[in-house]
Image 1 (cartoon, rainbow, N blue to C red):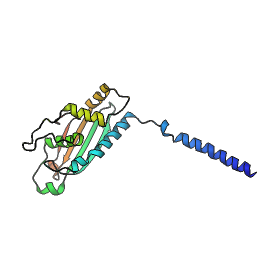
Image 2 (cartoon, helix red, strand yellow; image 1 turned 120 degrees about the vertical axis):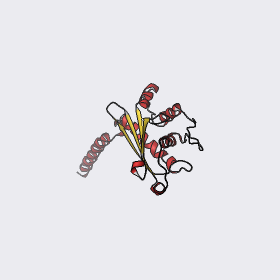
Image 3 (cartoon, rainbow, N blue to C red; image 1 turned 180 degrees about the horizontal axis):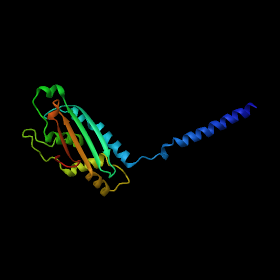
Image 4 (cartoon, rainbow, N blue to C red; image 1 turned 60 degrees about the horizontal axis):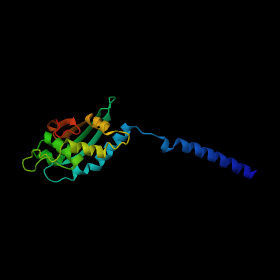
Length: 185
């Protein structure tokens, strides 16, 4: 009698465990390429945002950086970055962001380079569009099922929009362009 009860409990436990394990099996769960790309962008920006905050020199000082990622129904990708300038420093200092600050922000995140000369603050041509494309392919679009052509088409359809928020809101700027475009508009 006791053996019969123990045997029934064991059988119920075994069946319940198998049903539960089958429902929660990660090998049977698939994620979409969109989800994977979104995750890769998020990991990339999380890993590299310290390049913005731990910077000394002629780059603007930021107090926070936010990231947003959207893919529409046509599979166009929009990457939004919002960089908030340091309030303590720029409330009293009369510096207002310029288009080159958007480019420097993107360049530091992706390449860890400014892309502008120290003295004249002119573009120094230390990298080009191919360098930007290469880092994006290597760090974000590491999807086995995509060909080089497909990845290039996805990069061509990826837009980056950077908002630099000044403590005086009317002085903030927005730049936009293709993610691999060297100089953003």
